[in-house]
Each structure stands twice: as structure tokens, then as C-alpha cells.
Amino acid sequence: MPRSCEGKTGAGEGSSPYEYIILPGGHRFDIPEGEDKQEWIQYFDDASRASREVIARHGDGRPADGINRAAILPCSAHRDGSIYSVTNGWHKRYRISDTNETQLEPMALSNPSDCKPNHETCQIHFSRPMMQIYSIQLGNISTGTGSVQVYGYIAARDTLDMLRNYIFNRSRDDPITLEQGSLIEMIGPKRGIDMFSAVLIEYDMRIKKGEQEADDIQLIDGVSDFDELTTPSRKPFLSRIDGVGGAVDITLAMFHGAVEATIQVDVSQVHGNGFSLLLTSSVSGLEKEIQLFHGTVSQSRGLRRFVVSVVRDTWMHLKFKFGDERGGVIDEVERCASFKAKMHGYDSQQINIVEASILVKVTWST
Image 1: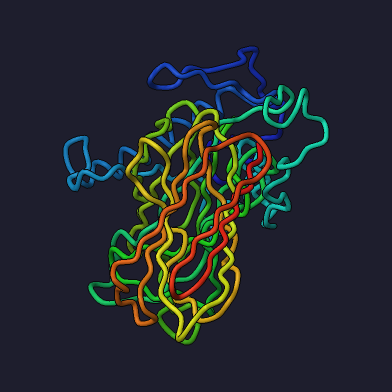
Image 2: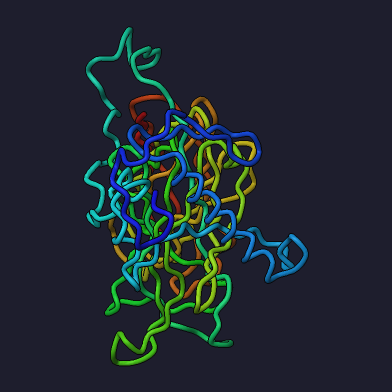
């Protein structure tokens, strides 16, 4: 980990005999083999200082607005290229220079052939700590009130393959129109987010202002890390990512002993002009919901695939709220489907309303 964005100390230079350092709060951090202890100490000092500077601008050791700030890691900006100027430390470990999307698919172990003694009581595969992103939201914008067009991406990088697992991804030609406080529609994750080690949240989001990209305003830019030691377990919390053009709020949690749930919804026998649908997911013991889909269904089709994390042997609840095609309420029609999380296999339920027939399938994987 270099002391500055310009420094590029090679692995093994200035190696220390010490194998770990103790972070604030008493947490232990193991030094990657062959890397310099002093550079990691400097890295954590820089990250801590950046976080304190954000807090200081809002008053007396705590944010004046009461919103927790996500620390932005040093040397992580895309616009100035500093994120690609470093070749060791977390940049190397998480393969930051590789901008490809993860190639790992969900449901990888939904039907393994090596379970012993069987799928239901498997002792070969195990649940794991996983991150669940509940929502991303436009916290504020520096351009004043009104709507803005936003594009760019937010992606998670974990240690399964270290490649981008997109949560949001829009090109400049296909921006999303938002107002301050708007939920930002999530397109992912593509697969479950592993949290055996720290997860990096990488982002480069901009506000479209004119014909040329040079006219655009940077919304947020950088990388924030959420580690398995300090991220609250089974308690969703909000972190605000501050940027030049405003801020984005991300709400997430870590689940110990979790499995991956892939939700597939097929709509058939659609009558009339269709209907509006709000689909949310929640887990037992937590009121916070994840908005999976909010839109209009005018013909028979499958919705996109949704992937969430659920603690094994707990219940996941899917709530369907139906309205007319203009978003009005059809006699306040609401249906729920509940599924108990398990290691492997799948479960399905059929939901029938006047306007359509809906098949819900949940596939479980470790």
C-alpha cells in the first residue's frame, strides 16, 4: 500500500517481520505476505484522516445531519486515474485494474453432486457470511432542486473473483432521471456478495449536463470498504458517500450463516391492459425491505432475476402489491409468499389474481 498515489513500492521492499497490526477498536489486520507493514499503517492513517475530515465539516466529531459517512479510500478516484496508478496493496488484491464484470453465476451450488449424506443435511457445503445491499438512494445534489440525469456504476468486489458485481450500471446514453431522495433502481447483484473478507464498493457516477461528457458533473467517485469485522450483523445501516456533485446513500448489512437466494418471477395469463407491480423482499426479524421491482406488466413475461442473501433456516418474505396500469390501486390487492432458506434446491409458489397468474421460484445455493 503506497503512502501516496505516486508511490509504487514493489512487493517485498522494506518488508517487516511483523505479520499484523491492531486497528482502532482492537481489530486485527493481517499484513499480506511480502508487503510492507509501514505502508499499511500509513494507508489506514490516511483513510481514518479522510473520514475525520468529512465529519469535521459537519460539526464536533459527529455529522451534523446524523448520517454516517463512508470513508473513501486513498488513491481510488477514476476521473484523475489515481485508482490505476498503484499496483500493490488492495489495488492488487482486488484486481482493480481489471474492469470486467464477474463471470461467476448465481445458483452455482443449487444442485451439487457431492453432498453427503444428502442435500437436506449436507455436511460438505456450508453457509457463509454475505453482504446484503438494501438500497441506494440519491442523498443530495449540489446543483439545487429539481431532477437530474445520472449515469455510471456502483459495483461490489469480493474475494471470490475480485471482479465487478454491478449493483447499478447505466451508460451516458441511458441515464436515469432522479430527484433528491429518489431510490436508485438496482440491477444486481448478479450473484451473492461474499463477506469472508472485506468487500469493496467501487463507484463512478456522474450527472449529465450537456452534449459533451466534459460538461458533466462528477457525483461520486472512488472506493469504500466494508469489512467483516466492523460491519453490523443482521442490522441494516446507512452510509453516505459524499462527492463533488452531491451524495449517494447506500444501506447494507452483513448476514452470518447466509445462503444465496435467486428469485425468478414468471407472469402469465395477463388480462386487459396489465397492471402495476411493486415487489419487495424482507427476512424474518427485520422490518427493512428490499425493493426488487416497481413497474408495469402489460404482457406475459419473466421479470429479471433477483439475488438476495438470507440466513439459513430463517424465512424470506416476498410481498406483491398490485395496481392498475397507471399505478392506481386495484382494491388494495396484496399477496405474500414466504420461503424458508436452505442450503440447496429450490421452492416455488403459485399466485393467482384476477389480472394474471404468477409463478415464483426461489433457488438456494451456498
